[in-house]
Amino acid sequence: MKRKIGLLSAAGLITILIVYLAETRNGYFDSKVYYGAIQYWFHGDGGMVYDWLRPGTPYGFTYPPFAGLVMAPMAVLPFGAVVVLAVVATVLTTALLTWWLAGDLIRRRGWTVWFAYGIAVCLALSFEPVRETITFGQVNTLLLTLVAGDLLFGLSRGRKWAGVGIGLATAIKLTPGIFIVYLLVTRRWRAAATASGTAAGATLLAAAIFPDESREFWTSALWDTNRVGVLSYLSNQSERGFLARLPIPQVEAKVWMVCVLLTLVFWAWRVAKAPDDIVGGLALTGIVGCLISPVTWIHHCVWLLPAIIRCIETNRKALGISAYVVMTSRLTWLWEKRPRPPLELIGGNLYVWFSLALLIWTPIGTRRSAEVHEEDKILT
Image (cartoon, rainbow, N blue to C red; front, side, top):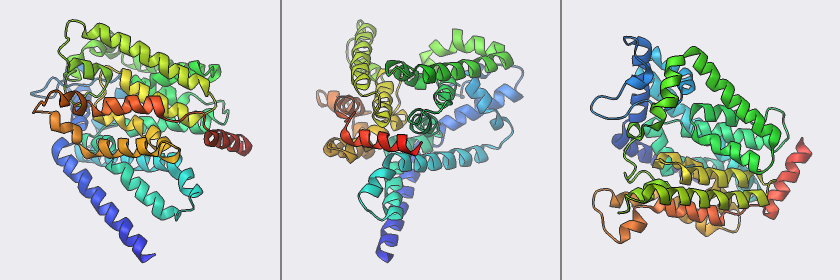
């Protein structure tokens, strides 16, 4: 017992140190953007949230107006309180996701639950996309929790409210909308309609309250990629980011469209073959969302966690462990300021390569996933 407590305490201290070092680099940058934009919106001279840019940068508020409505409490909270709430929310949602995704593995292996779970949470918090989410002050794990809870406890158990979480996540940030496509591909018509209706209802609510902001977002801010950042920046680990770093500017957009189409077709083929494997669907859809998005910063790659855990608990342990280790090591950043062709093609796109590998080889429709699905049906 004392040995386990000592090991867990050491793991916790190492995790805190890792996150602290990340904070010294990132300094809650994104939270400062959100906070500045919301403060300007509610306390400025009548300007819109999309008018504000962080001084000295091209970065501004990039989310739909409904996200601004959700973040409205920032207008009255001090920035320190916003940071504390964001950090606590990310840690708690990461702990919850870890239990949802790895709890069954811990129980099946007969490990001491509190010890194994504590180590698993430390590993999850140390994962670079998660620690970057914490130290940038991002919302990624909150959105993943909304979607995962919807799929694991709504869709898999046939609840009438299945789709609400996906719809809300989509209204806050458009990229989770790929899960509505997942519902359509797997023929969950009612859940797809619920998700679409929820997203539309939240969007229309924001439009009714903030009509000018809604018009600005859908006609201008959404399409202004300069507000997000340079596509070729190393942190953009999507297929578009990979192509933007190649010397093919004349055909880059066309090649990207072909890559997106091929990726979507392959993903749809895999998930359609195993529609009852909800965890597998969550894993593969999270991967494809990262790959096809024009911009997938490294902190967005928290969506790869379900796939990594699925690989570790099945017969793809080597892939899952390798993906975790490489994506936690910051190895890809060696190519940020000192290009080293031709190795840059590999090293500068490690997240892209591992995302493709996970999309191809993450098990779906396995015997174990079928057993879990049957257990869920019995529980309901």
